[in-house]
Image (tube, rainbow, N blue to C red; front, side):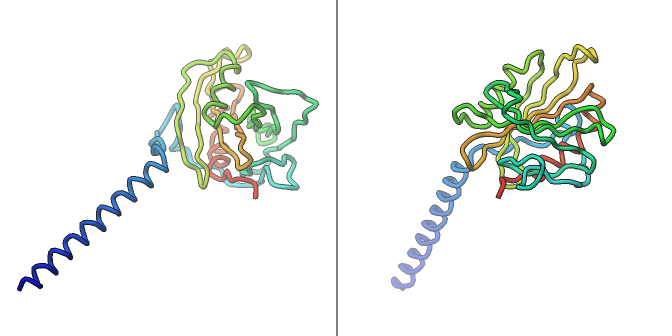
Length: 213
């Protein structure tokens, strides 16, 4: 009898120990993973309910017009052009590397890719420095999102535009790369209407964002 009781107690202790180890492992994994991404939000300012456009071209891979540390898809007729160092287009420690023109697809605006030249600061800090020099912006909101294998930081904001009268909706995104630096993507149009018309292309780009292999 005592042997049976002892075996039962040993079984309970074994289960408790295993459960405790599992819980400790779960807590450790959660700590390593960091905070959970922000929840999805329908409508402005995040527009998470907007479906991605159909993929037509790939940007960033070797042999494409813009060779970048990241790759992503865009709708057909969007035209990507590299921006060389000679152009000297920099903002907040970030250098313009690629400009994707939406005009051939009947929209007035650009998706731009920037490489962070400053010492590695992480995606959030790089994005904050970039927007600090962007100028004439308000209502900035940041959030953490997950797209495929990448942990990203997004910002939505309004910019006062002298041509359209603004303020117009814009979006920016920061991604850390395997090289240790960050890459920024920005989307802006002639006005908020153009921004919203181009937003399915942005959803496609961010949902297909991958490190260049």
